[in-house]
Length: 261
Image (cartoon, rainbow, N blue to C red):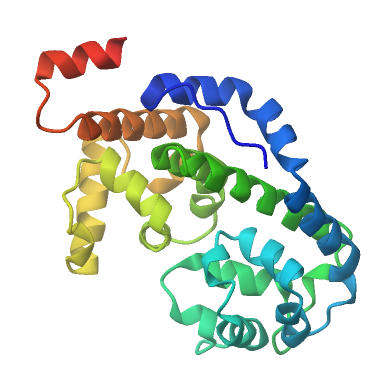
């Protein structure tokens, strides 16, 4: 399996990863196991007509879950089958009970619930799911070396879609709060303390809005669909994460010198 190359942590490492991403991702996608899984998915997904059939094929399930960052649920077959068979049209459907919107996106994409249209009927369905799985797999491999890089890559890939819908400002914030990687990104970039997620959800919303307005000059998360705002957000996240990683043992001058170098 190809391993992503990172030359350092923090902003320097991020800049290098940005410059080399296309070449590295292409090499990574040719890794033997990944290619076997994606080739199998492309060949078989069109014939899958039920949740039971999908979870019965581990290679298909691997790609399906990986496309939505839910790969840790690979062994929870009953849970996944229930989520897919429920669909998302009913308010009490299993996927709709989670604050993590990735479960809703996953179930809705495959369209195996009551009254839903199978996603696999679309001509480009397999291609899109495979591309998402490949990107997520690369992010995981990167995160095995540096978790902050994984979160930054995930935000760069997904945040525009999360905040670009037609929902209210509050709904978009709740979507961010419901996705652990995006929550971590914002909490770190905004300098929020550990345990902040235990506060009342409406209080959290107010803090996210106030701090984002103070630090970035905007309170509506849809503003981060703009490339320059997203870049500033990721840069702030990486800088704060790097400072935090230095720990209390370093002086302000030492931290500044390390960042500048």
